[in-house]
Length: 312
Ligand SMILES: [Zn+2]
Image (cartoon, rainbow, N blue to C red; front, side, top):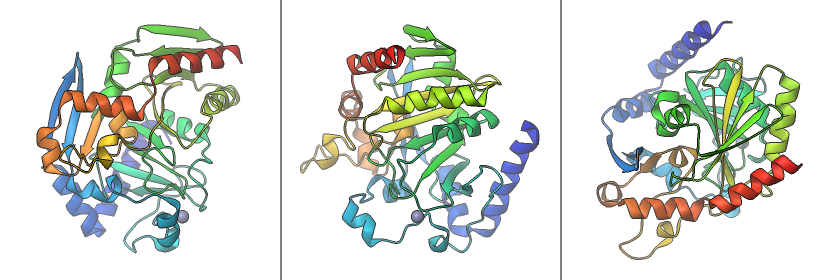
């Protein structure tokens, strides 16, 4: 199947699903009227999205005791009767429309087996991203924004929605390293801290080897977010956001400084999901910088990770 056919088959799957699933359709329609505003950090816009239906994810109890008490909503046997499956898109995964959207087209790609979120194979996500250049694929480590940490999954949405995808396409980054076929960049000017790897996908075995090395950089695989997307055919951009905290201190505050914000990959890529209108109306640039600083790592840590990658 060529790329144009693949895109139209994704569109028709999406349309078919919404035609038979009213709750999901209502939420996608509501998304068209959701409030959004931007706060600039230099020339980079962080977009705030006031999205009440995402409270199910932002406020999700993901501790082991709570998880063990609820049925897994990504296992086939527990999914809503209306939810359709495309099992041909990604081998070993069910391709599903996400019924709690952030993107105009928002998909969840759920492993057919109930396996832990941190047992991810990064090559699967990279090859999906390379084959679907109109989408960005993203993954949340089990303690970094995944609302189903017990069931392996990643997600995908329209690539033009995330400010960071466009930004890295237009900006090389201030510092770069190059070794083997990998280009490595950092962006110290941005409030969110990540490493960008530009990888060739033309040789799947080499791609797998490189991704295995990138995978090994995270000593705790639960503490990371990943974004993958393709700017040019035959290549994939991998953005790794190492994490040091699941949620920022403001999430747990007991006074008026409390914010309902629980960052995952989408938030790290410049779209902050705020289910409560008070937070949306009043959050400041300083508070946003603090959120990124508390949940992410600093530039020194990124540099030492790059050094480890280069020296291994
Ligand atoms: Zn499951």
